[in-house]
Image (cartoon, rainbow, N blue to C red; front, side, top):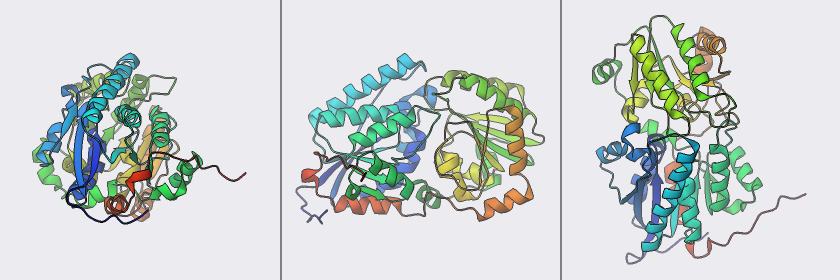
Length: 395
């Protein structure tokens, strides 16, 4: 590592990819800070469900934040079968290859474990573009995101992880310790820099009537489970039916295989039950505001593990989709069974567990992760990143 001298005629060219609303929420502050540095020329590329009408066309949220988009790769997401997802990856590789054919980048930044990011990483490798990977080393037993995340780790050259345990795991995968940095999670900064909306204003803005209890629900496909996502979703909905005097707010499942049955179950449930609402995308400000007024966040989203603990709110984490990730004491794990889910909700509302939540600590660090990443990128020598040695652990 060495400090680069600034040359206004030769800026470091950085590309960043976002494919989902959740990942964009984590990347937003980093994008702003990179574009604020005189060392960098930063380009943002949008792909995945951002460009899908079916999934809320969340590219509009990026534009509403006045963040300039340099290019887009439309995967034409319209189905949720495994064959369709494979086709999306192929389209992504082709789209990113065209970008790299026309412009050389010093580094391409990817966050997480989505299949569209695997496409970007594959194209970058072939075009000899170094990769910076954020949130590697984590474990999610119940989803094929697990394999994709580790694959991107092996394709990447700089690693920005969220905890020491994850840093150790990335090194265990053979990555050089000097290139693996524990910067903490990016979600904390997004929360701290978001102006939350009051419960009264939120009610008017979303046209939602808040009852005594408020539950925010996000349930994604369980892509490696032997039972179907629809079965798990049915168990969750049966548990929610048992809640009295409660407002239930659903957000859209992501664009993984088998998301269609989940969406149809939610739409039917909302039609048949009062005080239930379904949003394709709340947007970051509305989502965080809903978390802040909720009595619990329920489902299997990474947000319940990475971000919700910062609000000192209970998370009901269902099934194996997030199994293996570090979690705060405010997270209750339960089986995808209606009685188990019901019992977890009851536990989350007890006075004793409320005290646990109030004193819990988010293991994904304090604020400052984007600043740490920018500083590392400002002090990186990009001339010799591509050729990696495999780091063997001592016997």
